[in-house]
Length: 307
Ligand code: BGC
Image 1 (cartoon, rainbow, N blue to C red):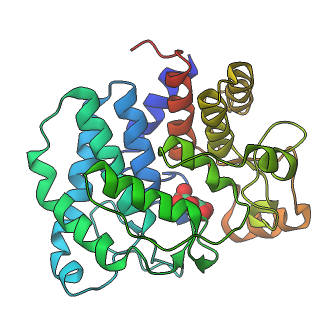
Image 2 (image 1 turned 180 degrees about the vertical axis):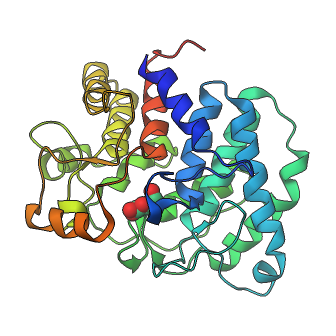
């Protein structure tokens, strides 16, 4: 069963410190992102892997508590850290606020789902709330680490996290731009995704989902995690057959040994950009733990998981 394989791959990619490495086999992704990790912990929680999820939440809490001075002095926290909780020195944008909202959201969901006491995380939750109050309205780099602005998925992630803990979210209006990260809105309980427009412009003829129309990263393929998010949006919209079709699409893109890549190359938006990325960083990331996480979440929501 691919569900069991997804759990195995995620556990294998979890460091002893609790961090989930985004892709343990891909140098530039040997970090733990708050965004990827929160969706991964949320998925593990949904399928009953309580200990794994809590080890990640402990890692998040330690990262934040170690930076209490940064938070209190109005500084910026990073989007990703090494497994042993150091800032990464990679030349890549680091200021993203969505992950701090997402960890609050995933943690609250987990505690409610399993009736777990939240006391051990409360100091870090309070610091995160303070951080988001101070910095949550700032323009920052969007989910795909390319453009800075007020992005709908980022603001929805922050709002979902604050509201999960009963904190008001006073945030700016997002810019109006079509991006498949909007598919997270229904999952985060923050409204609907523009499904008609997404289907017309970002869902490929084969059924996979592109990030946005200008994507050139590894040629701009279809992302498995976004295709699973489309399935979750279909499910919430009552389109069960379509939801099952997205699950089948994701599973059809597993390697023979059951690993899920970041993207597929069936239909590239910018094919000329595929090779230059391979020359720079090697073959595209696989397995991507976030792909496995969204596979698990969709499978669980469609009643396919044994727990
Ligand atoms: C994506 C990020 C993601 C990171 C690790 C990047 O290519 O743009 O959203 O957090 O990979 O998976």
